[in-house]
Amino acid sequence: MCEPPRVTRLKRLHLAMLVCVAAAILAAFGRGAISAPPMTVFLSPQGSDSHRCSRTAPCLTLRRGLAVARPGATVELVPGIYPSQTLRGGQSGLVTFRGADGGRVSFAGRLTLEGVRNVRLVGFDFPRSDPLYELLFDACNSNVTLVGSTGRRFVIIEGNSGIRFLGGAWGGYGRPGDEDSAIGTSGATGPSRMCDGRLAAPAHNLVFDGMTFHDNFWRVPESKWGGSHPDCFEINGYAYGITIRNSTFIRCQDSFLGLYPDQGDVTDVTIDHNRFIDLGDTTYYGSQWVSEDTGHKCGGIVFSDNLWLPNNPGARYPYSSLRTACEPPRGVPPARVIGNDFQKGPVRSDCTQFTAPPYRTVWRNNTFRLGRACSGG
Image (cartoon, rainbow, N blue to C red; front, side):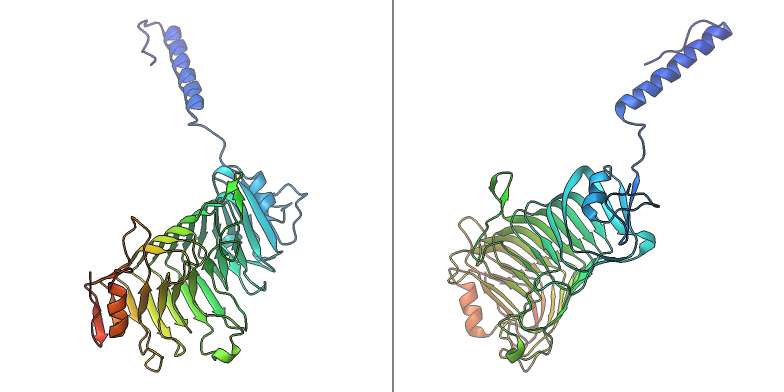
């Protein structure tokens, strides 16, 4: 701390004050209080990665933009259609990609994220462009957020953490063999990717907030599914710490949400304050959580404060409810279905099965507009 000078002569006073100001400036630099603002990086569908990524000489790929951006920077993309590409890398602080002047950014093929960290994508569109998935979260990504994204289908495999979808809409497909948006693994029965020289950890800390999943094989007859099993969204195993909230599932042909631990255990899933509306007539259940014959288990699932209106009186089970046949792993609580507004509950035989061992599903404080309540636990 610099104390005021005790002399009264004017020159010495001015000199002392200059010393104080200089010391304060140096201290500010030392604390990082004064620093150069993050620069803005520019991309364009007509750009080139040999350019300087400036407004007048934009680059082309997200990977190049991320490489030259400083932590806290914004990468502005001229609205338009960009080529299929893979994004890798990241900075120590968040880098935001967004369409310039609020415009939308689209892709002519799949966008793959692999080993990406501290990135936010705003206003990106992923229309049909790939035989499987238009957006692939390959392994080893962390702290990646999509804001207001729209598309057909995405997949998140092992080794991903801190992935957030905020707003946006996904769906609108129904060709034979089309895959669903999903959380799963790179192998058919489990993980195969490596992160930091080790087998990748389960996908975890995933949030889907304010989204819409919609129009999955809607009104398409089973004879034209081509082997598909339409779920608007699937969780296929080797994952934990998943939150789905404030979202809408609408016009899903065979299931709103599937939870199948075929590829590993699924635990700690919160599904709350969502709307499930309009389900096809091809189904028994609007959502299946099934650990039978998989070799893996599922538990710690909380399904609460949701609105469930399948509006399908002609279905195999009219007004198709939940199938909660999840056996929890040791030390993990069973599934809980609490405080929801259902059009109708499960059929009596199912309710008896779900609430008994080994599943022990808790059904409590739900309302049922038609039929009997399922209660237990």
